[in-house]
Image (cartoon, rainbow, N blue to C red; front, side, top):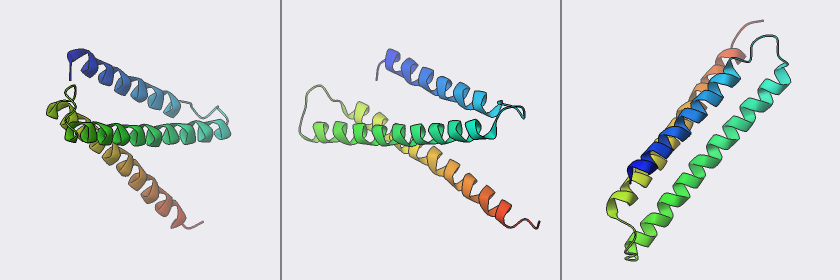
Length: 109
């Protein structure tokens, strides 16, 4: 993977981080409906990106197995690890959401 591709991945990560921080700082004055919609959209976008990364890793692995000269083993491994890390991050977010939901449901009114 070239330096430009690494910089592109880092820029995407920073943009997602800034977008997530911007949604969290929405404040108490905003409408809760728009905050929920923004969170749902962000979550859906994250899942879609993980899916795309996993599909790309699978395509690269298949092309490497078929002997494509423009696909290197390092590129396949990096793509696979990137998809794995993204999946793990989304899984952790899901686990935290479920734990928070269960904690709220167990609260006494």
